[in-house]
Length: 552
Image (cartoon, rainbow, N blue to C red; front, side, top):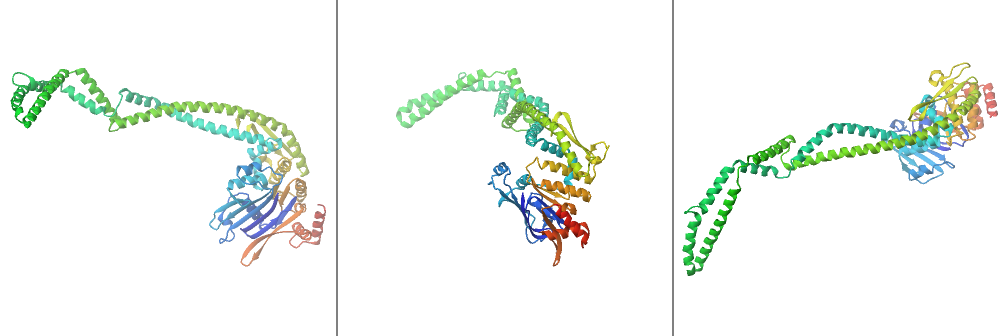
């Protein structure tokens, strides 16, 4: 339950420190006194968005601190998930610096805004006039049904599984689009790969092919030149070897006369042997050279293909071409991997669809079973609120495929008048009727949910004094099982509170400032009398106020 709220430098508030004793606390004050500012400040501590404009003074930071008693609440999982020490007293603090930066604290530990919001949802429910409009929304209506049906935990499990299913379906959609595009490109990339694979590219191939082509095209010239060279060395009567043989014989004759002559001989003999071997090699080479038109055509064809591929892929050499081949091969492998991923996703979707279907069926059973009881209890409370002829119906329809709420679609139907045909809320319910219906549902929810505190912001809007008295009775009853805080402008409601806080404003120096204080018994009489009459209450109004207070 909310124990204390401290506000510093927020809107019209300089500093405010308010305690909440528990049970039913009412808050009153003139229009514009600052009741809404009080709620806005509390909202900051609960994780709502902060704005620099909220600072009363732009030279110092704004601080809002809300203290809760959390004994008996199951918050262990929250503290564990956020790596925090579990405490029975919880202090939520929000600080806004002069430059607009915001920081959030939980028991003096810095936490994220999301963590603050997540925890506050387990501690308090603020029912504003705007929230009444949620009654027209299907998701909110389904959440109410699940709360009554005791299926909130099951629905939470379903939403988690359905969220996974949605994510997988989106993944599958993306994979199918990718596969469709890949299939369009597959044949083309396969053709490119086969084309590159067919000619068995190696680094340096083009240069070798060019050299081989040159050799084949000039085979006759090469053959003739080799033959002439071999003949000049060792052909006919006068050739190089014969002449060198004579040189060798001449030097050999004088080799015995000096070491240097021996060296000459050895050099000549070495040249003779080398030339003789060269002649043999030339003759062998000449014998191997033949003009082969078929081979020339094959070499030129390979060379043309390679040049065409270089040009086609806009690269300069075989290394770059081989890289392109590797890249294409990777794309082809990705397609195989994509098919495997698709198959895996389809299997997971089938499994999750079955799981979600089972949970959705279980949810439908619990919801259908609870509808009659909800309608009956709401009818009883509405009757207590002077709406004896009101009819409230919950229409659950089934859809063939599971959706965000399972198989079920819910509609709240309502009629306030006798003989009226129940229709959707937004078509038939006035603001006051919606407020009373929402109160009826909240009153029932108080027995179903473990939420320790609820704040009603003018739940009595659009109702008369008699109905306000009955609303007050319901809030008083709710106060016996949870903490209730009600902001009201009606005396009948205000008189129901065990504790009465009064919001007022006054001019301090050159600025208007809002204040809040707890009223004493005598002060309550005067304040309620003012609410019944004017700022200067009559004796009759004072008497009426005392009577109202004595009844509660």
